[in-house]
Length: 258
Image (cartoon, rainbow, N blue to C red; front, side, top):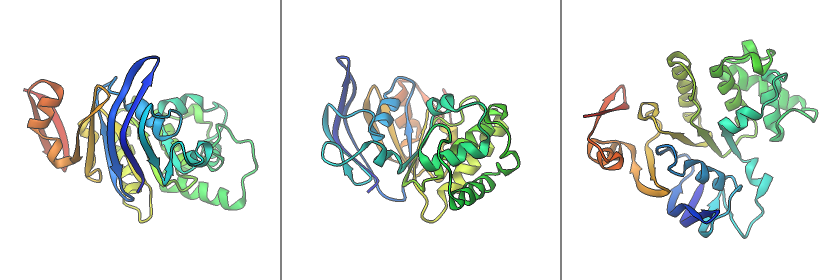
């Protein structure tokens, strides 16, 4: 099991951020974490990465139970994450190649000497994500779409069991977004690849590979289960408190206010 949350709540500065969260992800499953801004998505991700500990409830991630097992960097090295926070911390003079290599050490910046095996792996990842032709360019000079591909490459360097993509298409134009989503689809289809949690508030980014979705609203699980069942007129109209129409095209949903 990739993660198992039972009755998890989180309070910060006296405020209840998450309340009574139950969530299980089995090995090989890919999930969408869907919710509006302020729903608690970021707090939940921080908890999965052991930056926050639950106020109550039981959290087990990659076989490690919070409060009983060693967490910290040991756990985070098995989790690949792409987020705006990590993007903002990247050093502007590092090349795309160096940024990917840094993922092998789970560091921001490259301070240790990579092995030949790590170098070969970083090059293979860059090629797989169609980044190799700008591998030697400074990260700061890349487009937003190129930067996101490089960050995904960095996240894959340690063969993570769990890959968290936190709104990775933010700021991308349509062409860059679709290219990035195509890369994510490819990663999700690989044998032995990581389970993926894709965080978004845009339904049209829900790829066919994401067969399960958790709807998070006001810090609570509104519904969870099969994507086809929950991304529907009835469920989303109640979720958004307005009449919603869902259209499926090429196995991806778009929503409209009626």
